[in-house]
Image (cartoon, rainbow, N blue to C red; front, top):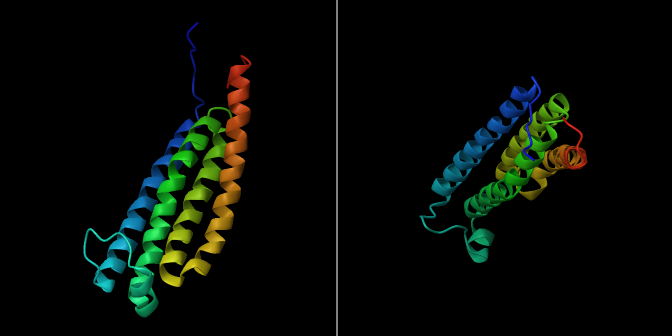
Length: 151
């Protein structure tokens, strides 16, 4: 039997939150590119070696920017899935949590790139809490759909 679904009127806000996460990826690109240029490390080198990073603060900063970007890429897809699913049942809350995640991930990116691993902690905590809430709401929404309830 086909599933016919109507998205809530507020679902556009969910899509805005999802789309804004793409801009955080651009931020990561800019931070990594600036750090790469400052460090003098050429493509295709993905990270400075441990020895290089220990001797050169600019190489270490490049590694921090690269690691922040990698962490974002690792987390963006699960975030988008949770956001888009939870938004079917909780569009306003999902959009607010999504916007919070995006802002926190921007703070994470900037903090990690500029201050190293300790600089990422505030953004990490806020992003993790909003992500956890989105995943819980996505699970609830999924169970409701599986049991035949509509959004």
